[in-house]
Image (tube, rainbow over the protein chains, first blue to last red):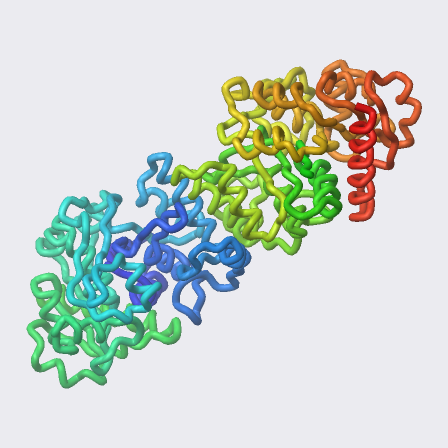
Length: 313
Length: 313
């Protein structure tokens, strides 16, 4: 058997870790958002891919949700002394990945190959893949003008009000071959859409026509885990963005957003009242993932749901 | 008044620091060897320029002679974990300079402008300039084949026997404009050739026809400080290379090497016996520079010599 997870950064990485610890080694493929990727001081930075890498390797910083544990900041202090922009944090250990990745890309190696090499070097027995080897850039149209994703998310700390989101390059992007293979494998038992921000972190994947088609043509259950708990997002601007886009902040809106792409939505029991109004089957399980046990418990529950959906297919 | 120093890395930086602390602020220009520069993991690294920068900024590591004091090594540990080459040490703080420099060069900024910006940011009131803005690469012909400089110097730790040295690109390289201006300034009182390795660290400068011509056509004294003390080099492979190239390991050989380019050689009193055989005036002063006092004392002595030579001109 095998499983594919579609994910953004922090929240998605938590459930991916749960899946990784629950499933047999070598059976999980995580396809990760690269709409947040950007070039900074000449370095190619892939925030969601690296968060996934560090999380599955057990190297993630548990407090801040991004970056590495036991990080040092010597490089950043020098950038500051040199008068460089410091709004984007570059940890010393973290920067090693940016340097090697940038160098490999300059040599013509594909991003998917680079990430596959990294995860093997870090002894991760799951495949971590970018959604595409070509550039897909998330742009946020706001009341402060259109902003590149990191400008909006990090520099402006999601303060501007969002009017729209587009994914530059998505129309012509191809899914990386290994992700396509994973999504069409005869062994595939389930596709999991992680509780990442649907608009910022999952939509970039769905904006790639080939990936959307692969999901629409699936022969196995696709289950999304809602990022909302009690009409709020645990972390990040999901609820704020839904409001700004004129959407109802509810699991019904999430389910409608994934219409045709999912066979079930997992919601938190505090939102049990939402279940009646949803267009897809609903399963309830705590979705707050504070501990590793929370993550593996939710992952096991999601896999059980997939099993149930198989049985009823 | 103003002074120009020609220098390589560690030894040259020590005397340059002495000159910097001795001369009025803003009067010293150090023109530095870039034959050792190389690209590593996509970063453009200038070992001698950075050693000079750190030394004049008071940031140099006093024990190892290269790199920064209080350096951290998180980045290096990750490079090792990723299976990258680790023969060249990349300190965390040090790497910030490599990143910014590489980025600036990619944007079309000249190396001399980058270094000038760096030294201003680090509050250094002396100009630190590369000898050229175009690439001049030192290649070492050895019994193990021809090696790029860092391969010879760092990776092979100067073990192979040297048969010859060439400076790729020197013939067509131009001196950076600010260095040319400094060498032709009406205020110029002296040119100092620092006690760097003449064959590895000073010859790359002299291999640039324009720079050699500027030295030959000088109207002010040029004084070299010998890198030898008692027929040995304090640090680095000077004596070993002289032997391998079939040269006598002596101040006479050093003076002949700089024939026509210098008006005097400063040697250590332990080599007083060499004085009689030298083709240029000789001044004696301790050249071992363990302390800052040693450095400023030697620098003051060199400036006094220049003054004496002026008087006798």
